[in-house]
Amino acid sequence: MRLTDDRYAAERSQFELALRMIRHEARTRTIRECTGLSDDRIRKLYSTYFRDAGLSNVQRRRGKSPRQVSRFVKNPENQLQATTLVALFCTGLLVRIDRQNKVSPCWPRPDVEYGHRICRAFETYLLLHDNAGLSFEWAWNLLLSISYNDELYLAVCSACHARYVQDAYALDHKTCPACEIELQRRRRPGAHSFAGP
Image 1 (tube, rainbow, N blue to C red):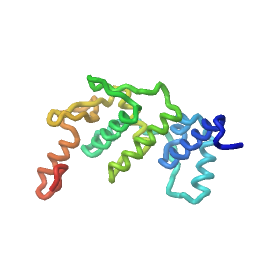
Image 2: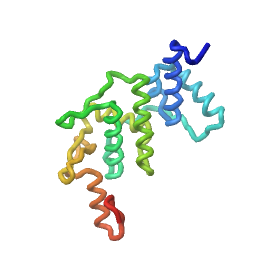
Image 3: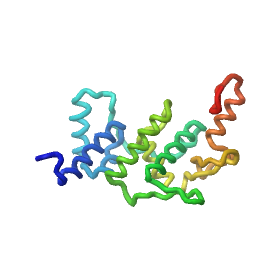
Image 4: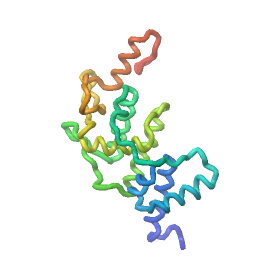
């Protein structure tokens, strides 16, 4: 068997995605949705390539994926990070945003390519935020939540006109998280701002 044979390409891609998602500590159900691999196969991959290989820094998360949306708007920093992720989802063609700022999914259901795209978006997010506060599973939840345009939506800042993630059931002051962080820093003497010292 040659690994370059086309008939093995799909299985190899599933396998590579599963390993990539395990590294990000995705839950078994999330991995299964994108790869189509069985729960048993996913557990064996973790055992073989991570636990038995001594890579104890990669953990397996148990239970259901997070479903709350309050974490994304809890404070301006979380809101900024959630907004960054939504922008990366849009850049990765996972979602599209129309002129009314309504978010629509680009994929009818998760598959291997979808999984790789969300991994790329999450990995880029980690590079952009030194203090990344959202895990892969939270990113997955955000992608699903923002696509429903129900509890979360994209609002527009009255100051800079940037789009940002907002809770549909919370009071919106029409201030994006970047502007809010800037205002907070100006109130504290000696604090550095986005604009520089």
